[in-house]
Image (cartoon, rainbow, N blue to C red):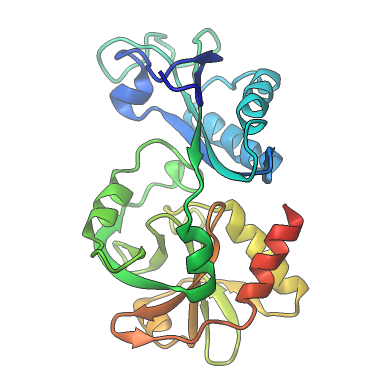
Length: 282
């Protein structure tokens, strides 16, 4: 049993085989950076977690209890760590339909899983020197009901990540209309030749992709620093013709891309400033 895993408040790394999170991926999750005992952007992460529960009609966990359990693990962190929060619909019988025939879960006890993980040494290294990006062939399906938040059905990302060669750190994913959507674990931005910054539009029309917490933080920071940022459909040619590419998520912060599809890119000059801002803001 691991001391850094809590399941419904108890120190254990096991759940029931009848849990719908295991059976069907019926749940939501968030990954949160922890720095010196403090979960970063916690309120924003919990807001998206709540939106995900509402989208799936899963009973909301008691946020007071959830915050206490998060603090219990985060308080043990001296430097950096990664904290993951999973909420599942809870126990259910065989079959897709919940035990509750109306599929309204007000009487169903959800499962709370909170776990703490090591902070990778590679994170800061790639922040400084950039990464090599690969185009993935696995496509993201259209489903507006499941877009925008982190539900537990992540097989598209699993398959795309399995495509990556050993010398590539991230993969770029498209939908079935050949729109660039995101990385396997990150959001993508391109710096065009006219120094404007573009990131894929993620809305009901797109119908896929995650609206990352760090994506919005990056947009706000760039605008505040006088960069022109737009959210619009992007194609592969937009990436290939860009002068720079960078990827964001809540753990990596910002990684600039140094190579993609045999083309090399200049790391945008604001990369160290943005990551320094994150260190100070956290």
